[in-house]
Each structure stands twice: as C-alpha cells, then as structure tokens.
Image (cartoon, rainbow, N blue to C red; front, side):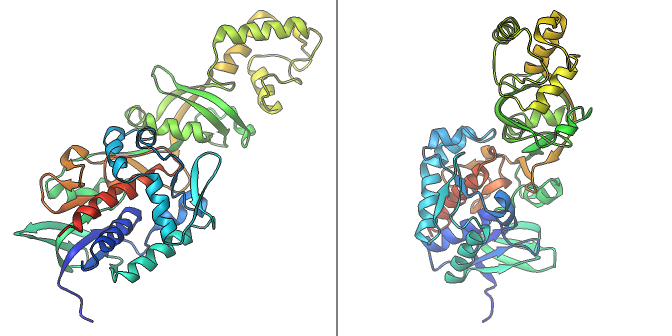
Length: 411
C-alpha cells in the first residue's frame, strides 16, 4: 500500500499526549488519515517508566476545581479544560477498552495489572484498529504553513504534508528541541526542571539514609514556599512526596537561586514553637530521671532522634533533669527548624518534567488551537503546564489531547 503524500493530521510526538490525541481524533472521525512522528526509536517511553513501571495513569480526584489545584502552572486554565475531560473520563475511557484502573491509598491510579505495558498495548491496539501510521526516528526540523497545508521537514530529509498538526513533543531539558515551534511564531517560555529532590551540601544526615517521617513540614528559608507530608532522608539529601511537591511549586524560584538555598525542616509537622517548648518542659519535669537520647519523643525513629540530640550537644548519659536550657533550645530548634544547605538537585526517578514551554495565552483553550496559526494544535507537556507527582501530568496530557482531537475531528 502506498502511503498518502498528504495526511489529514500529523501528530508530532509518540508519547502519551500524541497517542491519545491521534486515537481520539480517529475515534471521532474514522475517515481521517493520521500519521504519528516520533523523534526517537521508542514509543510511549514515559508511559513505560512512569510509576516505577506500573504507569500512574491519573489521580483519584473526580472534580475539575480540586483536580486543577495540583498544578503549579496552568491551574486556572486547566479548571475549564477539566470540565470538558477530567480524571473520571480517563477512567471510563480505559475501562471501555478493557483496561481497569484501581486507586491506591494516596490517590494515585494504576492499571489493575500493575504493568505499564497494559496501557501501551491498549494504545497500540487502538492505533492498529484505526490504521494510524507511525514513523520512528523521524525528528522534525522545520514546520511551515503553505496555503492550507503544513509542510513538515524531517531530520532525515523527508517532507510530509498535512491539513492539521498536533504538537505533543513532551517536556525537554534542551531548548533546542523547541526551536522549530518558535520559528512558526510561538513564544517558548523558559524550560525549567520540576519534580526533583534536594542535594544536601553538608551530608550530616547521610548515615540515616532510608529513614522517613510521615508528616514533616518543609520551608524554603526567606520565602513563602512550604509543604507538609512524608519526607525521606537519602544518601544525597532530602526526598519523599513533600520534597517533590515543594520542588514543583517552587521550581521557578529555585531555578533563579541556582539550586543554592536553605531548607528548614520540622520533623514533627507544622507546629508552633511555643507549643513544642511547653511539651519539652512538661516532659522534662514529668520524666526527670529518664535518659534523653534513648527515649525518642514524637514517635521519631530512634536514629533520627539520636542525631537531633547530638546536634543539640546532648550527651548519651544525660537525663532530662540535668538538661541545661541552652541544649533544650537547640533540641527545639533541630526538631522544628533543622537547617539543610541545599546545593543542586537530583531528577526524581527517570521522569524528566519541565515547566515552561508553549505559552497558554497563545492558544484557544476551548480547542487547544494556536491563535496565530490555524489548524495547529498543542497538547501535553510541551505546554507551560505541569503538575505535582501522582498522575497529574498524565491527566493534563489526556485532557489537552482530548480537547485538541475533538476539534481536529470536526472536518
């Protein structure tokens, strides 16, 4: 069969948003001739590795407004987008294809198989069903509009034409990946990493790697950026859901600070200093003969409590009755304002997520179509939209791709 020289739709990017957009467009208009172009040799690579290879498809949050509150960038715009297609629609769509999803305690949703291949197989089956063509190792060099057709010039020298184009190239650390989008007239906002862990320059807690607390309160010193939740000590510094979430909300600030900042950790949650001081003094008077180091308070792990006592210069043999006020003050400080000098970041798992990309103000958000170039659409992480960890970035990809595809399929 000879391939058509002109397509109805070329999707640039063989990831989550690209595949979903192509499939929805074909579902709504099976007559469309569709081609997916993927720059690398791997299709759906983020889907494959997401959630530790289980694919965190979406989040168990089935109302548009609460769902939109998990996005540091794009929150306001996504609220309206989610009114058209949100997490419950994602669940229904996959279930209609025979892929059942389950919600875990923290709200993350996975296929019941706990295998990302289930999602990939579902997409590949739909692509086959609608005869959507795929070409791998075909990066785009130039995108032009000539009269009513787009001309796509590939790195290989191949030239392909299409009536409509959906750009879904995902997030990239390298701004050069977006140059051809800029050349067609779109503004690319600075690409900044988000969802990362903090590298502790002093490594005073390194031996405690693997220890976690369920309800830490973390503040970036001299800012209003704070987060509450589970925190994990690693051999390089600080990680865990609270740190990852904080990195998303503070991404732009931390980038400007060159990832050189002070993180203040309360191991016992967001508590008032006076409350903790009273609790320590009360404990001191009611347990005067008890050794301090070997009897952790606040359900803290023994090794962490010991380290906090050491930093407060409390000797192993010291009992509460003999604790000088200055050491109690230091212990208090380490409990609620433990200082970490952060220099640098580490990518969370293998999933590189960026904020920045195509400016949402340049799109019609009812259709995800460019305001500058008709029949040019955008979806997924190529947009200046990013979510916290937990299925939110995929949900933004499904929703924006769905809206674009719905418009693309119309004629």
